[in-house]
Length: 76
Image (cartoon, rainbow, N blue to C red; front, side, top):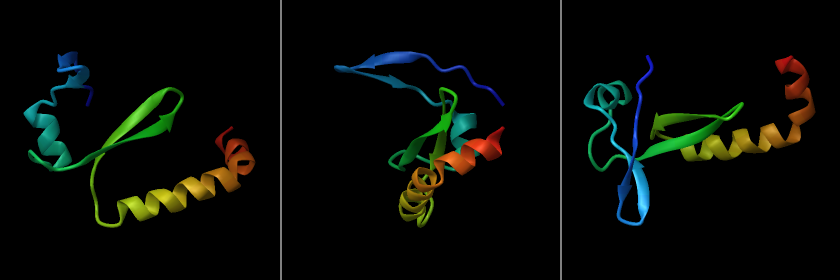
């Protein structure tokens, strides 16, 4: 599924409006937290908060840094 979003001015910042069908996919509602993470090659991933996500993200970042060369070779 691809959904086109437009940037809009919100005060001194820019924001996007997330359509209701995308909110349903993410299973989120107003006030919930979303995470925008780097997915490589200039792309990003938007995901909903999950229990333990922050801790797992720290562990994953550490592993990615320690095994950067091996992961690069595996990605070829």
